[in-house]
Structure formats: structure tokens, C-alpha cells
Image (cartoon, one colour):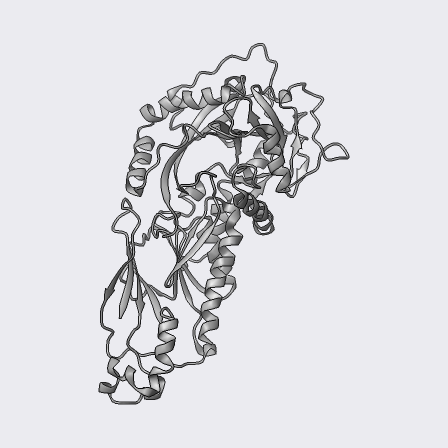
Length: 513
């Protein structure tokens, strides 16, 4: 029996490589010829309880597979799925990658069909091109989006008090709730199906290379050996099938435990456990800052992304519908709170052609015109800020920076993780020196930023990216025996991963018939 093994000795090791060993099956092992209808449903192990692992778990359960999800952390969505900017992309982020734009656009609709209740709209969702140091001019950027049929409307960014921009447009990308998905997916699995605090340190594929035809299963023990494979009765059928379908009679054993044996193992760990061989990847520890809107009237909510270069993005950070209800109650008398004017992922403007209008109650949406407004310098006491009653209705945003959110690029996951932890455990020094850099980045476009926003907190995360000049983040699914590895940078490629995984499973089933 040959075995293919993937090992991870600790949480700080480099992702494993494939190694093959040879051993001997117990003499009692054989392959039965039971009918497919009498066989139990296939068992699938999924490593990683983020968006991809949980989504595939739900879909495979619906199809009758027995699913067990392994998660090394104490809860689900504690990796990259739970710590990002929570943008449901339609492709505007990727003007230099056609494949990623198309996947994002199609994926948006697929995602909304299943998980629209885990998203919300943005009152004004703005993409803009900087006047200087941009890799694309605004005209080219708009042509690219129009050619890909990505919805956009030109917009006068001066109404938002923004400067140093060549042009801007509004889109209908949505915000993912950052806490609601965790609650939703927890309810989809039993304790036996979702194993928390259970890291997969070793996954072993056992491939039978010594077996006999069922027609000999009543023969003496000495006949049940590899030598009988040369008999005419076996060689023309079983040996051919073995050569063509070397993974047909295989199982996956997790952590050397006989009770954790599966037909398939799907790695949804962003290449931190099972490396996708065809991809040339690197690991990028990241930091995102969270800011609180301190304007007297924080509506409408505005998202802004400055492209295409080393710029920044300010995006709403919302835990779930409960938070939105609390905020709506607090600002029930706001004259701007009625401006939530698009639903179901499609913009419905205040004019017949669907374009946005500027609210008449304020000439400049993001300017309070408050003579008493003062600059709010970032104070170190806001680092590790504790939640309080005021935070329950705080309107929060994430601020990311192309130049400063990445904490480095590493070929070794271990070194990348060490860097991430260094920042997370030393906020008074590491985070404190980054905050002014983030703020300088956005102040060149949004001069009133520090009058309107105050630093609140931060989080770190880990990204896995391919080396690619186009910034491609397309979804790839690859198979090695009965191991399946999924690599994708965006949540709206769930449908691609699901389609490819089911294709692999169904093709395997069809070959058995």
C-alpha cells in the first residue's frame, strides 16, 4: 500500500509538501463488490471553517455527503474570512485582471442568491482615480468597467469634499456583515460535524495496490496475495482499472486516527495547509484600522476606494442587522437617515434614470460645516479600546492602505505569521507608528477626515496571494489524489469552487459505475 501524506507539525510551520511512503496492508484487507446503492454516502473532511469551508460543507450536506469540518481555532471565521474589509466585489477593484472581474461579477449574483441576508447596501459607494501616481487614468478605468458590463455611474466627488481625484463613479457593491456569517454558519452544523480546536497536523491518503477480485474472496488466505494479480482472471480488468484509476480505492486518514477516515479531504486554508502546486504564491500579513464616525449626523454612509495604485479605501464595518437596527433607532430623527435608497443589490436612485442626487439638506455630505469642529489627534489610548454602551451604536469604518496594510511579503508562512503576531502583540509601538501613515494616505483625498473620524481599534489578518502583475485573485481548484485544494482571494468565487469540487466528486462517482 502506498500512502500520500500531508503533515503540519505545528501552527507555525511552512505548508506541507507531498511525500510518498510504502507500507503493507493487513492480509484481511480486500475490495468488496457491493452495489453502489448499498454503500454509505461518501465522507468528506474539510479543513478550515471560513467562507469556503462552511459554504462547501452546507452544499455537500444537502447532497447527502457526510461532512466533518476541522477548525484549529476556538470558533469559525477567525482567519481571513473574519478579518478583511468585507466588500462583496463586482470587479471594480481589478481593472488589470479580466478573469477576476468576470468571476467577481458573476459571483456577486450567485452570492446574493444564497447569502443576501448576510449583506447590506451602502448609501454611496464611490470608486475614484487619483490625479497623480495612478497606474490607470479615469477614462481608461471607466472603459474597462463598461466593457465588462460592471454597473457604474459618474459622480462629482467634490460633493463629498474630496480632492486630488481625476474622476469618480458610484457602484452597487455591497457590504458583508462581519459577525452575522459566523452566527449563521454555526447553526448549520452539529458538534460532530464541526470540530473546533482541532488542528489537522497530518492527513494521509491510503491507496490500495494489493487486492483480489471478488471471485476469489472465498479462496484460502495464501491466495489473497499480490502474486495472484498476475492471474488471467484479474489482469485484464482490475489491473487496468488500477492503472487508470489509481485513486479509486483510497481513503484519507486524519491525524492518524482510525475514527477520522474519509473518502475526500478538501483544504480551504488559503494554502496554509495544503499548497496548490501550480501557484507561485506568497504570504502577506496585514493590518486594517477601524475608525469611528464622530460627525453629529453620520448619514448617509459612504464608502470610498481610491484606485489604481498605492492609495486607500474607507469602507463601512457592520456586525449585522441587529447593529443596523440600533443605529436606526438612535438616528431616527435624522433628516439624512432616509437616504437608504437602493435594495437587493441594485441602485434605485431618486431620479427616473437611476442616478444619485445630492441631499438638499446639506450641500456637502461629508462636511459638517461646524465652526467648532477641531482636529482629533490619534491617541494611543484608543489602541485595544474596550467596548462600551456607546460602541453599541457607533458607526464604524475600516481604513486600509495599499502601501501600509501589508506588513510584508514572505515565501514562508511561518515568517509571515511571526510578523503578524509581532504587530498584534505590540500595538503601542507597531500600530502606533502606522496610524499616522494611514491617515496621511487618506488626508490627501479627504482633507476633513480627522474632523469626521476618530481611531477606534485595529485587527490583523493573513492573505495568500499569487505573484501576478495583474493582481489576479481568481479562484483555482486542484486535485492531488483524494486531496482537493482551493485557492481564492475573494468570497464571491464560492460558486466557482463549488462547481469544480462537485465536478471532481461526480466524475469519480461516474468512473465507479
